[in-house]
Length: 139
Image (cartoon, rainbow, N blue to C red; front, side, top):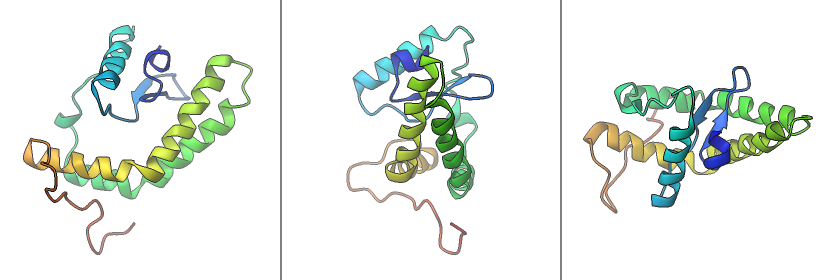
């Protein structure tokens, strides 16, 4: 159901079909769409507790290993884009969007999230954001 309501934010796992948020909303309309997806999830799988589990180091570790997730999303697109099932063909677009997001906008969003995790508040405009890949770290 999630992609029917919030396709710019929800993707499905190809093994179990579980929904997950791959892009956080940026405005009120997107937040409402995502909340609509949450409300329609019959498995109550949206925990909304990421801040309790993520740390700056875990975020940086995930970023360093993003190639594995990017390849998974690209493979999902290749597999589902030729499916006989219309819902899988539609979801393939989410795989493509996730790859594009990893390549273009995710790094900046993660820097803002690192700030949030460290300061418990959003950064003010012009306030320096933490670096995602510290010097000397493998990329």
